[in-house]
Image (cartoon, rainbow, N blue to C red; front, top):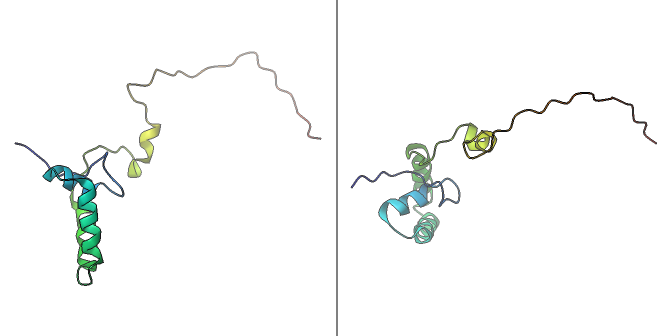
Length: 101
């Protein structure tokens, strides 16, 4: 059995940490989130819960590979599923001025 603890790419609300933990232990992700919120609302565990979550965000690797800053460039990169879109060259185009009224 070769399971790895990773952030979930599909079951995430903020960063996928709790979704990854629930997948690793085969627990219900909604129950894990509810338990985490309840623990963070307890007076003595607020700060500890948030620090542990931030450490998990930093230390737990992602289960998906991002190509740009925060994954924002993923939508702009070419994938093998997209057809080959070559650049179209226009020829014999006339340029004219358009006057505004």
